[in-house]
Length: 240
Ligand SMILES: Cc1cc2nc3c(=O)[nH]c(=O)nc-3n(C[C@H](O)[C@H](O)[C@H](O)COP(=O)(O)OP(=O)(O)OC[C@H]3O[C@@H](n4cnc5c(N)ncnc54)[C@H](O)[C@@H]3O)c2cc1C
Image (cartoon, rainbow, N blue to C red; front, side):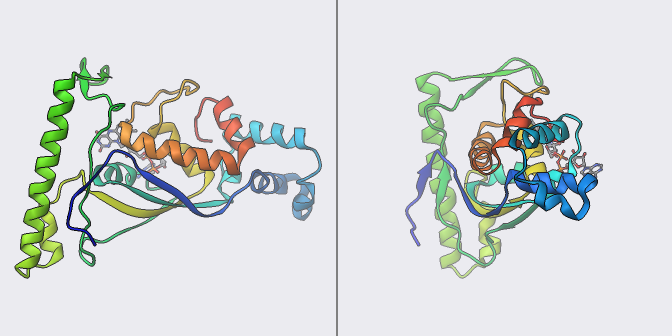
């Protein structure tokens, strides 16, 4: 336990548990034609397997992509989790509790790569880096507000106030942690909405911080299911 605020600009994404492979898609799809022999078909023809996965993705036969599981440990600011938890289907979540645990003073501050200024009208705007003066203001104001909020939290705890009451003063830039379990289909839906990509048929404009989480999850998934990942990209990054 530390009482000195820590400021972070990155997120943590760790794949802690998984049962996920391209072959999970293949046997699930081939039960349609091969029945109980579908498991034996898996290793028969790599090129045919690739073609089948691509066909399923293209024609949006989604259920074969659900027979797998990935559990991620994610540590990110609370505002990222608020966006993340809107994804209701095919995701299971457990998050650390501000009622049962004293919250640690770890806070988000954007780094040099994070664009700070929004230009244009809603729905048609872009982000630009901002001036050094704006960057300095962001860092100073965030640090000051975080420190003040955390000191108030600590003073209330020291006065005997319950954690669940005292936490009300803590901001959405505070880091939280959770386990999130999903399958390839639900992850693809998430990635289609929460990452920007040149291959996306339907462009999305996610907040950069949840995109950082999505990019790290995608890298883990691509390693486990390379054929499925390639087919996702080849078909415009639209979840089947
Ligand atoms: C760039 C961006 C900006 C956003 N801005 C806002 C915002 O300003 N305010 C805001 O409140 N939210 C906002 N959201 C959240 C968004 O509206 C969705 O809640 C979020 O992206 C989760 O998507 P989803 O519902 O498709 O996912 P899931 O909840 O995982 O659902 C997956 C799919 O299941 C089906 N489904 C799930 N539930 C239902 C249901 N009840 N009825 C019918 N079909 C269902 C749909 O086909 C859905 O696409 C934003 C999201 C993005 C990506």
